[in-house]
Length: 282
Image (cartoon, rainbow, N blue to C red; front, side, top):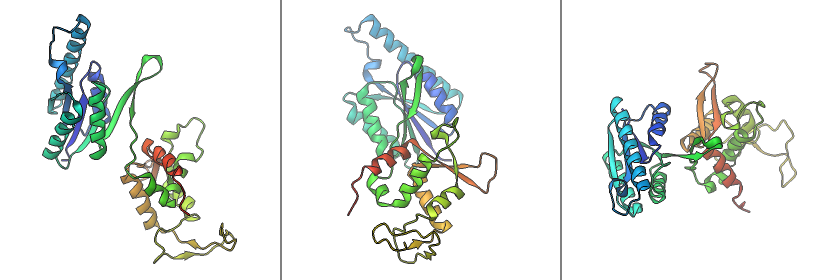
């Protein structure tokens, strides 16, 4: 069974956040609650308000541990000694060493900012999914995944086929009531869009397709040389983008298993915007 580790920073509102995470990520098998040592230290300098906040946060931590225990999920409290950049990092690396094949997710909505930043930086290196709760309209906290492209903007901009797929998913008009982030496009549509545009990164062994459209070369004005896009090549392109968390593969909404659908992720949108800013090589 794949080990799925969830790390959450201690704070007043983590109990409902943790419950929501478990609903959205039922695959979580272990939980670690990272808490600043100050949270569990009573000081004579603490004001009554500070003591109340600490007590509330400690109570929330206990609620998370009880919730995890009720589901048979081990939950451990990890004390982070300031400065957090070293102690939080080392704690995550120790967990990663103990579970080298585990997947990681982080909720950094609570706790000190330096600890949240330290954990976010570590998450980039171990490819963890990181979420943060923003203050939304009407005081409602909205949970968002922090988009982190796993393929560099330089790599994406250097491959026009990646750019074409991302742009097609990001900018193809949908139904008026459809949210852009939930828009799905079938694989067959992506194949059609890329087939007339396909530019092989490696020319060797790629078949030349007949230019029936009269498409001309932008620089020479002559008939353009079109290359044949195979289903295997499209699969390779899509699998790379899925593996980089830039697009997501979804089974057909109508239950047709023969057709796969794809949608762009928040990281994919950010990657496309950054790639379009890259200077073109001449």
